[in-house]
Length: 298
Image (cartoon, rainbow, N blue to C red; front, side, top):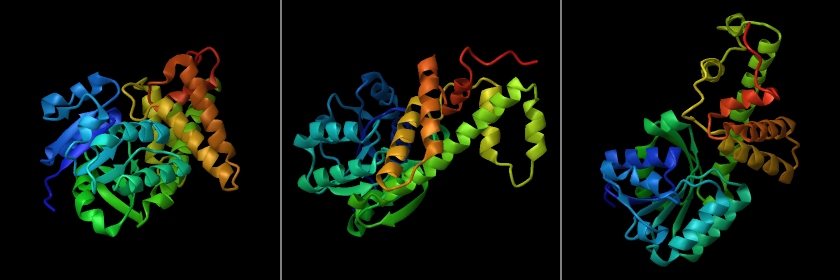
């Protein structure tokens, strides 16, 4: 198969739009659809064909890439696309979804003659824009010549976790990775909130751990977003992080692990969203530490 493909991108939010642009830069023909039409229209100047319906978007597609809110929304969209799905096309399912949702999507793919790849991505807005995502992928070896150019266009690395997408091995790894991301983000926010109310300068804390085993670049990155009030545009929005936290908690419960930190992170994110921070970066969960907003710095 030629490395130049027709790729349908269903879902052009923060991540999907960036992935579509990188596919266009790689020379692929890209057809896009989004429930909020304006987000898809923004890709027209880059050369994307904007479709009115999911079915129109997938016409003549070699690869269908889904980057939607969650598993149920993804399956609903693919059902709408079903009348025009080309038999034998590859479906690269990049949405972070529940483990059980992956099984349902794999069954849909089987029923419609699609080659299914469970392929969530690790990374946020900036890596997506730069084509530096990590793709976690599981799917049949015989279809990888079609999907590899797509993964190469949107990511810097592809980590293969298995040959049966229905087993959701890639999604399982993504949920584990996101559990760490969410825990680190919550800890960063709470630490800065405690520093604020105890009149401790954040730079004193960050300097204290600098270069030691407790230091980490991610802490500094999220701390600076909070301290400099640069929470918009979001790298990874509060509402999406809350959704993922819920998926992680349910996955743990289903398989026998009680995840207290993930559950608390989900509640913090939901509280931050209720305070009006839902579209901001997930670091905005910092605000959930205060009922009436953070006190003024001294």
